[in-house]
Length: 387
Image 1: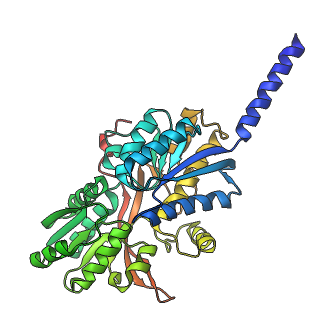
Image 2 (image 1 turned 120 degrees about the horizontal axis):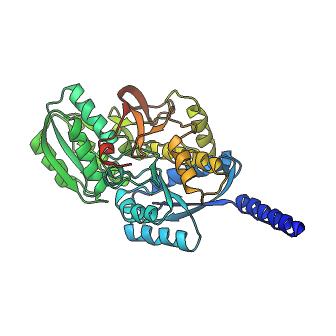
Image 3 (image 1 turned 90 degrees about the horizontal axis):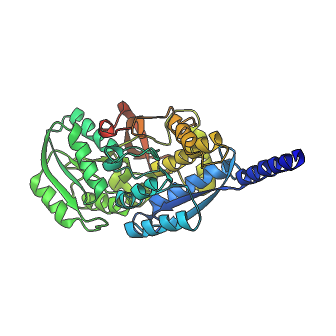
């Protein structure tokens, strides 16, 4: 009898070890086609880099990354997430770029028991009353970088501003964030179509209004077109243009060219940020992909490292949900932003910097940190979260 019990115990231990040894599948749903495709590419590439630098592991735990393209379509994102959960049994997901996709996917995922660690999208609804114990954001809250620009434009002394953004959740969060800290007058608040490419009408309206400053949020290809057309319309030298780092990342600058030179933008990270580990990440990314990492890449890398810290704490057994939550909340990982900590709503409390588009040594354009706008900034919705 004792032999039977001992054999059963050894079998159970063996099966448990085998289960842990199986790679943990991580689902990365992101935008890899259309005008915003390079944003998803940077998140994906940086996430893969973290795994490669860990020799196939995150936090020492073997992982398998499953990548799919949502095409910036919420319903496609929902279908992918359901397939990953039901067919592949994936319990940890990340990668969504656009907030309209996140709002369709994330709430049902976390309510169903999965974990979602955002590497970008951060709509206000999920930071406030819609917060959830299984939802962590490793990037920011949508309003944050826009709030910083509102403060910066105020500090510069512009008495009024003309503000624009796409008509989707992150666009509304952007302008709400800017207005929260801007103390001047709003000349006009304009929402354009998502994925709009021609801004002739909007630029004519700006010229007619003749504001002291213009603030805009247009990620991906939208930003390329807007900044180019702003300069072509002769407005760049007449009315200072400001925006968040999303519209001035390294890949966009290569496409925009000198139309962006000198523009001030806001970000919680840059390649020249002097914190431990950042220079190593930048060098590794450049070696792997032949380009300078963007803000999106930094967020993807941090999201991977955060997940790794959680996996290490539970030895890869993500069914230990309470222990995994505790480990993720502790955020015990080497962030490329320096010290990293979460607020009560599981969004970062972090510094936000002013960057300026400058000429790089190779003759191209890059961003350079020129100051710090906020220290240990807490998002505006944390008080609405009941966690």
